[in-house]
Image (cartoon, rainbow, N blue to C red):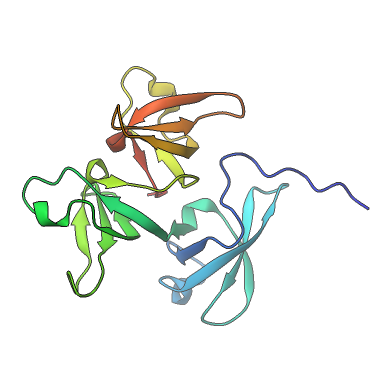
Length: 177
């Protein structure tokens, strides 16, 4: 049969949960939850199953907000009691530079607005690079977290098929906006 093309290193994995956003032609679908079911190499679009209507669509990364479970709060000075708590990134406010972060309900009922600098994303999360001054050519590019290096407080991030770099928490976001 046909040889399966290898998905790019920085593409979302099948099974990733996403929320649909910024759809102009089908605005009624914005806010719906979906699941990645495939990747179209020709167009660079994802096959996404809309959980609300069970239909599948080919969508651009810009129209998907990853839902990232297993993220951890770190380095908070004001709300120190949250440090070390695991939760889920459910959105990102690009204008404010804050994640919407859902903590366990017994800790906080409403999602908290948390800076990327205070969130450790799990390994293999696909992220966009931002605010890099020494390598500005990488800003806006998609990459993938390999691990969080405890000793340096930085991520080891795969930035190309061959190369990795150590980056600060605030220089990666799990969001396209």
